[in-house]
Structure formats: C-alpha cells, structure tokens
Amino acid sequence: MDVEIITVIMASAIIVMLYCLWLVFSLKSRVPGGVVGKRWRVLSAMVTLFAIGYAAMPFLGELSETTLRYVVSLIFFFGAIYVAITIKLIYTVIEELSA
Image (cartoon, rainbow, N blue to C red; front, top):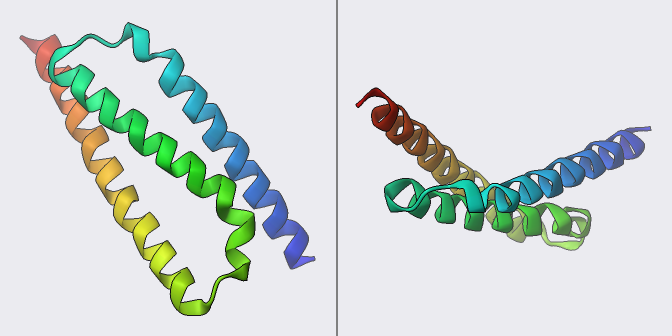
C-alpha cells in the first residue's frame, strides 16, 4: 500500500514539475531583459535542473544510503537557492512597478 502511494506522489510530482518547465519556457518570450530577464534565465535553468531531478526520482532507490543523502542534500540546497532567487525576482518586479 505504501509503495503505491509513494508511486502516485512521485508521478504527480513529475507531472507538476514538467508543467512548471513548460510554463517557464512558454513565458520566456514575455519576460523583459535587464535584471528581471537575467533572473528569469537563472530560474529557467533551476526549473530544468529540478525537472531532470524529478524525472530521475524513480531510479534513486538503487543508490546507496550515503549517495541518497548527498542527493537529498543537494535538492534541499538548490531548492533554497531557487526560493531566494524567486523572492528576489518578485521583490525586483514590485520595486519596478512601484517606481
């Protein structure tokens, strides 16, 4: 039962991340240049990295415990960077709209 739930959660996460990847690239042409454009490119790269990681998720069970801990640590690290960049991007957009 737990394996089925985990499989559904993983499949759902992969589908959502692929949707996010599609969104980030479909919005690319609408993002202006400058600081916002630069941060958008970094966010696009991060979403691509996460999509690859999510697609690899079903295969991570084959890794040793130590390697799996490294992978999880890297996911947390890059997730934190992604959140920081996103917040900074939103901050910059709000500053531009308030000016």
